[in-house]
Length: 203
Image (tube, rainbow, N blue to C red):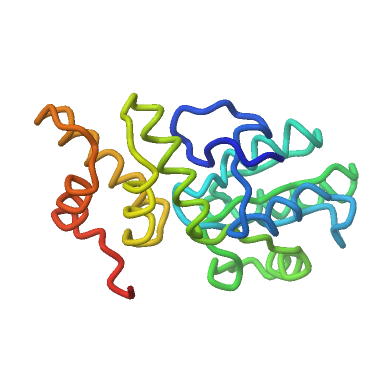
């Protein structure tokens, strides 16, 4: 997979070339890319909201011919149990996409819990600095907004480090820039970051 596009469910081509890979998600991408190395014919993919879990699931299904179940923790446990068993019988990989892994995803059906405990988990982490900058550049470009590398770096180094925060800051800056007919500058970015309370207070 390349490092040239966007792991959001915002408009983007849904193929392997549309997903940026950095240290934040490389282990997850590599893990689901090699189902033959899994100890069972199933795996769990977790990650924060807007991290591209569903997109990776679709890429996985298209590439491997396997199945992915999105928001798996919201499905009936008996159905997941049967789908897990079916994957073993048919020897076709199954990817369960969820917000959190077991045991945080509380499973009440003992037979399913025992199977999930033997299922490898791959996790997408919150965006690192490189991924944050690349996403910001891509998202502003998709909105037709020009932004300098300096302003991109300013936002990336100060924003709360989450995919949701990146989405919010781009939407907010876009709205202000359009409504006030202003260019996207570091000054504008700073004002919007403060107004939206998206500054990373750990810095």
